[in-house]
Image (cartoon, rainbow, N blue to C red; front, side, top):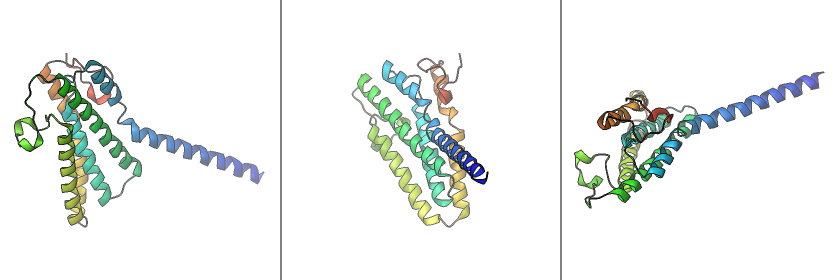
Length: 198
């Protein structure tokens, strides 16, 4: 009888472990999944009109800050992995948008990060500029975190900034839709990227 109860307890523990692992995998990749249909639509149509790359900016900044917050105050590794997956997803979206823009470009004028022209911030022609900006942001965060890691106020400020940026996720796409006066080019049901305005 005791052996039977022990086996049932082991089975229950194994089921919870499997369920917990499955939930963690869904958490890690679930945030990136809504961007798959958007990526496919942009790739199919060679048109980025319905997608705001500033969504990528918001998510990249939020997740870079979240990673440095984790260094100061460890939270669940699942959320750290989620940040890494989201950063890779946003880089994939930016890479695709840059490729589409370069193939559709009529003008030979390119806008680069090194131009230091505020009018074209986050509208650069080359994917490398986005990588350079994010690397610079990460380097700045790394230096500040190294210097101020012992400051609870700094660590909490990093976490608050990360949450604040993530909470603003809808703003860039909403502004893009208002500017276009349309949601044309967006896929229906694409999660945080869909804001029906018309």
